[in-house]
Image 1 (cartoon, rainbow over the protein chains, first blue to last red):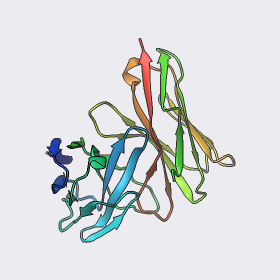
Image 2: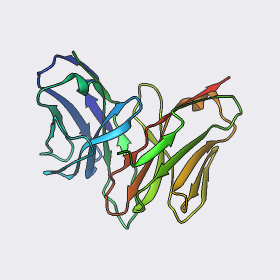
Image 3: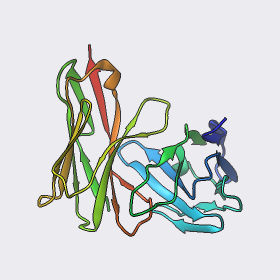
Amino acid sequence: DAGITQSPRYKITETGRQVTLMCHQTWSHSYMFWYRQDLGHGLRLIYYSAAADITDKGEVPDGYVVSRSKTENFPLTLESATRSQTSVYFCASSPERRGGRRNEQFFGPGTRLTVL
Amino acid sequence: QQQVKQSPQSLIVQKGGIPIINCAYENTAFDYFPWYQQFPGKGPALLIAIRPDVSEKKEGRFTISFNKSAKQFSLHIMDSQPGDSATYFCAASPKAAGNKLTFGGGTRVLVKP
């Protein structure tokens, strides 16, 4: 099915463990983004990617690692999970801008991560 | 440092009322201001967007008002319905930032029947 998917949808892990959240989109969008959503903070950008093999830090990148070897996949890894990383994580994608026109971001369904 | 400040955090209105959500920004390089709507358990989705060269934009029952000199913009939901109950996020993007957005803190809107 076309669209943007995230897996797992729910994850419980323990402090210090490595966790990888997966994001896959079938539109061949150039841009992909990872956000975390916490009450009172809205959506905060963790990392984004303008194309395969091009990634850049967002507002809150510490403790996270990303890679983008293929256009359609953008995994987010928590190298050593901490309780402060308990959150809902959203992946989004967006087509390349053309002619100065802005393009909307299409969001996945989210992954609810709990770090005990 | 929150570059886009959104208020209120939550809002309750009766059906037919007009919830108003306000956002303020500081970065004068912002030139694109979208609003996203999020239903419980779902990802946000684009609702409506405006550029600073217009003062108002309407799409159905949703209206954005924009005040460039005050660096403020707001969302009005006309004739609100229970199905409009959701969390609303304002966002902003500067011209040189590709498709990157800076989001406000969100407003939870509840429309009572």
